[in-house]
Image 1 (cartoon, one colour):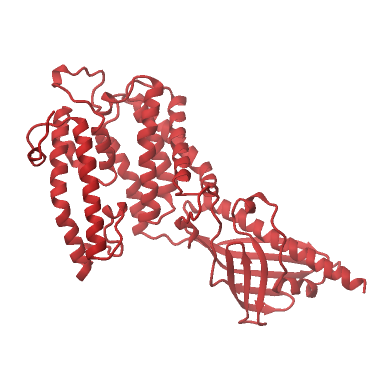
Image 2: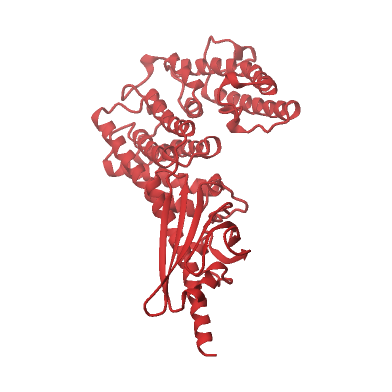
Length: 467
């Protein structure tokens, strides 16, 4: 099917899938490089792929645009208009050649959905006419490209859902900067549901096979996030207990949907389903949730007087390298504590493997209570990854210590009960799920410090008793 340059501007006629894919790829590459050139040369700003969805990050409404921001957006819109026209024209031609409803051209304007829509139109074969097309099932666009075999349909299901999942993860963490319901709940469920629906497009599948395909889809997405240096091993391992059951639930719901009314996947339905995840992410971004404050308390008994323990609490010596797997895997661990001054207003630095907590003293009740706030938090971990420099947003400001306290209580036997307390919050949702992990990690940190203080205080007590 020969296509001339003039045909790119005329809605009449049709176009085959190979020409559609080639022209679309060339047009996107040309437009993206033009956008980058104009952004950097004329407006001195960075332009990346996600700027197509949020071109101006710091403006919530178009009425807030002022000066250079308005000029920049006007220039980008003016440059985009001819490409939009070519995209709409080619999509109409492609829909016509595939004997699909022209109204589907509306999907061209939906973020993220349009990427999947373009990919599908590159796969759907040309059709000579409605009467010459053998339709085994009604109402499905994807059926023409999905293999009949169970393995082939499962492979294509994963091939379609994994890139969508990666794109939605990037949108959530890079554009909306959310680690919440959209990322950890809506996304795995939606991916599982879509994987099962696509997998069962050609013929009904069993529930176990639908659930298996759904879980494979979310698992490969996790591997891809690690391979593309988007996330590290620790965070992915923490997310697995939440993501896999939700993906399995989505696969089960996809199985029930194809069983109740089996007619193959409807493109409009899948598009609406795709919009669900960014919709939740956008809602979370717009309606900021106030994270709750959590408290972790850990205690240990020490065979030393409160006065001997107090000296170690205020500033303890360097702790030997950790043996615990959680710290060796990259979670930040305490190394030593330093004190600058005495009494309220003094500043304590608790040095961790990723930096120092800066802790101004609020209560100095020697040798009973040492209470402090926290004004500076280091990163909570170093990502375990094959790559150097992986720095996802959740390492900054999503796990924050508000303050801490050491409480020393004399025991009848002359020893001391030392209790450490941390008040903290995190910006991860569902908050209860992530609290299980954060509480456990903070308790491990407490016990590493408390055990070292115990060893040093008991050593001082022993040495003092033998002088």
